[in-house]
Length: 562
Image 1 (cartoon, rainbow, N blue to C red):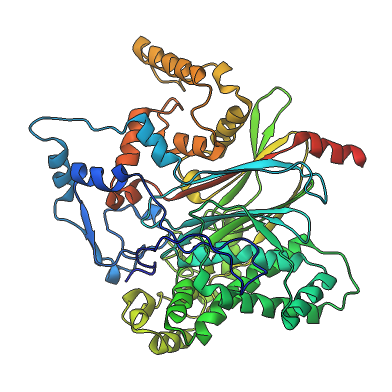
Image 2: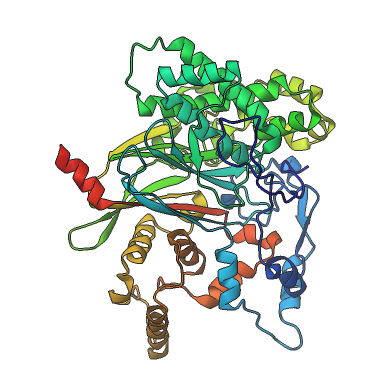
């Protein structure tokens, strides 16, 4: 059974009177959309190659490379999703009919798909409290899963200084990434509030007065909030700030941003777990909190306050800083570490947290217990709860959960839980004038592009310098016709100045459409975007990107003041 909800109804933004702390409008869920050609026209051209009884990441086809799946199914449950017999010949037969025809999306159709979820925000240089070191940000998403399992968030802190930006990569469904994208920034903002402000907010709730808004959200219309769960989420958040009030006597006024980020991540994950254990008398909410807890999500969040940049990362999304050297070239500075089997420190941490008898089983085939690719994540209570607790919650839960083979399945060699944590690794960086931008992206981008290429493409896009660089062919033998094509493509781009008005869109265009020469091949891009939903996940993951552009003059002024 799919852990994601069914087709979402389309609603209009409404202001919640019952939740004044959540200052922005909260639209009801809306489905991430594609142009008509994505769902209808292509189905007639390609046909359906797969069918699936349980559309779920844990129910994957054996034909999908396991390296592309964040959760590897146990062999006993790998048969829930099977491709049609001889599906490859089926698609080939459809593609090469008696009258061969090539089908390509037109450039306007490609742009319609690429730009469907793009969002841009320009930050006022002076926001009433301080001069901002951020010029603005661009963000975008390109789905591979249906529905998309990635989420993104961006908000300005209203009661403290700074801005929060984050990307969230869901697995085993979209429920957990959706919840974390809605809730985490509130937990961070509350963690950063001084004692007096927390008291003021609590007193306002007690007396029924209007609350101080603590976040100003910057959302694309598709970045919805779950209106149905807002009261539950608010009550959990209130319990958290009440505990902060009790723990803090008000004597210390200094807020440690690193500690606040760590506490916020851990507390939200704890609340997700507790809400699932307690349940809710409302059947819809009861099933919702269980879906959130049994699915999972990684998170990569940046907090920018003046020249102080903190990155909190849980999982395998990444933060990359774009630095412009004195000669105009670009270099990439990594501000996060992947929490997976390629990280030796993570492997060592896991082995130290469990008995020596589990040294060979805690990580198998580069996955946690042979199943999960990221070693840190929100939710995923199957890797955190005891076996008894899992059985008790499932047996007392709704029938949809009790009938789901995935939720009832216990990971192999499951002896000393928890095996998974949501605690982030926090990196601090002091911004310099040469630090031009920050890229936050889910692993769908980093699987297709090297970090240096990402920074170079964004840097050249922002400065408009890529038209002046010599064409690199990377050692390939290039015919005169191929070189003519590359030069023609460059001339076309120069005549139109820029095809993209959003840096994240420009990066996705390259990630999906780049050829061996590092330039966008429209034919390749068209083919990749034409893949039906059943096949798209075989070739790539969801891609979510936020590009934050810094104000070098403001950053330089901060340095001069010191």
